[in-house]
Amino acid sequence: MEMPEILTKQKAIDEIVREVKKLDKMELQILLTRLRVRKMQKDGVKLIANYDSRKIKAPTMAQIDKWKHESRKLHANR
Image 1 (cartoon, rainbow, N blue to C red):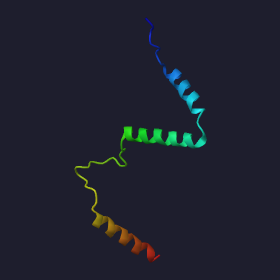
Image 2: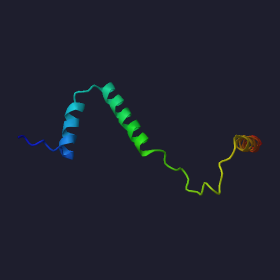
Image 3: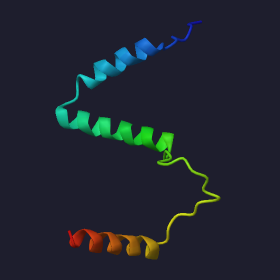
Image 4: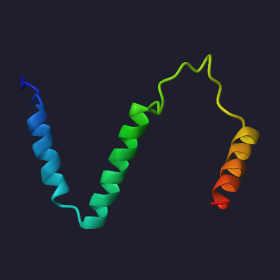
């Protein structure tokens, strides 16, 4: 009975490198993009700010528009 070969991290990396060397530039870019997207999906969305969302609510679109117009008006007079 044959023992199944255990794939170590280094062996896996070596095999990946061998296969990647066969790809052309465009295929490499596609592969890297897919790997990055997969990692982003796996990691999920990271918090931008650390605050208590139960106490601080996100602004409404009306509030954001008001701030935007006030800012533009303030900077237009300079």
